[in-house]
Length: 79
Image 1 (cartoon, rainbow, N blue to C red):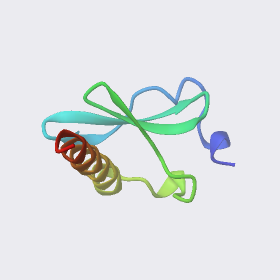
Image 2: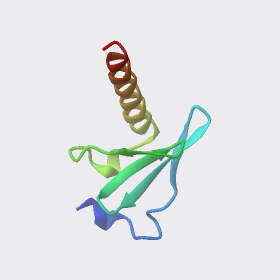
Image 3: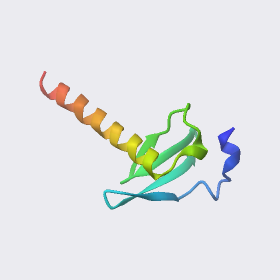
C-alpha cells in the first residue's frame, strides 16, 4: 500500500516543483494521496502509483483538471 511509503511528518509539503510559479506539493490525507497547487487540492487517480509521480505527471494532472473545469463551466454558461 502506498500509505506505507510516507509517515505523517513526511506527508506534508513534499515539494515536487513549480507550475506557473506556484509550488506543487504531494500530500497524504485522510482519504489517500493528493496534490496541492495554488491552495487547491487535486485527487490522484487510484491507478497511478505514488512512487511514479514527478513534476511532469503532477503538472499534467493539474492542467487536465483545470481544462476540464473550464470546459464544464463554459457549457453551463451557455445554457
